[in-house]
Image (cartoon, rainbow, N blue to C red; front, side):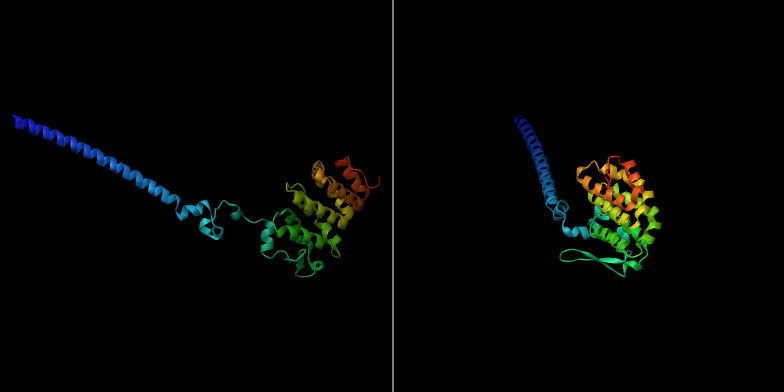
Amino acid sequence: MQKSECHGVVQLRNRKAGSCDQRTSSSMQIKHGTTVQQSNSSSSTSSPETARKVHPRPSDKLNPKTINPFGEQSRAPSAFAAIYSKGGIPCRLVHGSVKHKLQWECPPENLPFDPLLITLAEGLRETKHPYTFVSKEGFRELLLVQGALEKAVPLLPRLIPVLKAALVHMDDEVFARGLNALMQLSVVVGPSLNDHLKHLLTSLSKRLRDKKFKEPITSALQNLEQHGGNGSLIIIKSKIPTYCSICC
């Protein structure tokens, strides 16, 4: 009878020890799994690949695999930039120590204005170098050639909407280039511009509210009146009643 009881006690102890071992083993497995996960997590965050994503290298911009298809570098170039890159503008930028200049492939007076003058006017809306300089300086130099009046007047119906787009642009520098281009055009075509003035004066009237543009716009209006005559003054006053004539 005593042997039977002792045998039962031994079996009970063995069962308790076994279950305890199982719990210990399970606990060790859980701890081991947690340690492995933490190790994998720390190794992944400190891997060179992750570091590259957090701190992209400059060379990544040149690697097609790392280029964001929706990023700024993937945007299609503007029409002017595309034409310029394909050699559609017959001049190139010459960098000087003090200032830049244009070198034409042939004398500008031998170049057709259509569509070159319009293309250069479209480039006035550019905001990146060298397009800003090429368009601004190219437009100015083309209007200085002999015979510019006869070449520019027939283009006015197509040229005015392009200049208007620059004058309504939100970028202040684009607006300033458009304003200068308008004055340069007025000097060349004179009263021929009067029929198109009403399309441009609305945007000038709005910008007059900005103090920093009050003086240059007033100067531009005086330029338009000077080269457009009395006809231009009537149109200017109808759109900008506060304008004071240069004859006053």
